[in-house]
Length: 350
Ligand code: SAH
Image (cartoon, rainbow, N blue to C red; front, side, top):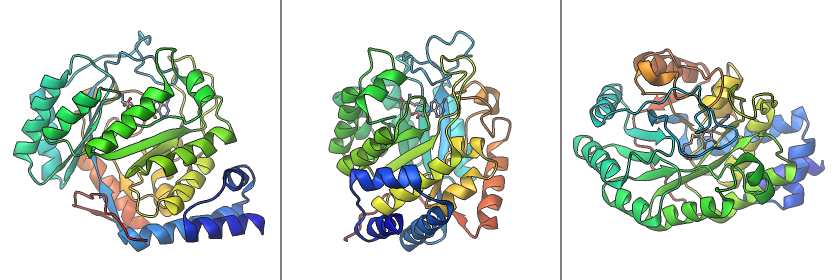
């Protein structure tokens, strides 16, 4: 009974205490999870109907100056194949995406100093000029306030920067000494202040993650109030220090998607590629648990497998057109349709 009450409270008031959240994370039964799932799905449907937003992901650089212990493109991974797309290649990806109906492009890469503000601004402006009706999302890691501001002024609309974990101690176990949770959070607050639709997020089941850390993640989201939140299971990568760590659980990821949907009824919440990698029907399950976004890959096939954050990543061999066909079929099978819409965040009065 206790947990059903917590779920009711989340659904009605969009909040719960730390203890209540921990109780759900630790002890939810399958039937209670089903109850939560239905509430989350209904909430998503109330705001978005049966429409799923599509973001075209362009992975434009696999160079990274950081050394995050979980990530396959960390700088110490000597086996990682490094590539950079040229501006023209990026524009080609957008053109192809536009033809296929994409109205949001996400440029994601490692933290690659080669793409300084001048180069990035040039690319953002070019996309903005050629595709006026499209939203431009950046996911380039940590940069200065001024850099974020310049990119925003050049036409970037959104920024994805997962906080990865909101627990200091845990953050320290996933990252090298020179990185800090404080700076990560600061970047997120800066992005919001500048006016970006901002996305935070974290991995589920990353090594050393505790229930307390997950509760902190949920608390941090309540504080930041991001417009988007990306979560996916941790998946090991063979050439990292976490090669032998256990992958995150799909069930726990789905549970968290549903909790986040109830805490942030109109948030943009992707069913991630990592979720689709951990489970053949992970993305479908994600949508049924309250997610409302999918992010198929628009990167050139020749480089897909080199943007290897974790092992066994799906869709590394498929043309964008095939990806969108496959995804649209998958969504149709569960009663949803992909929409050609920028899918901007919309405020609600509640
Ligand atoms: N450099 C950018 C993009 C990082 S890659 C940035 O710092 O934001 C995008 C996301 O992939 C990361 O934020 C991380 O949460 C996720 N990721 C990295 N390695 C992963 C792994 N081994 N398993 C699951 N997700 C991973």
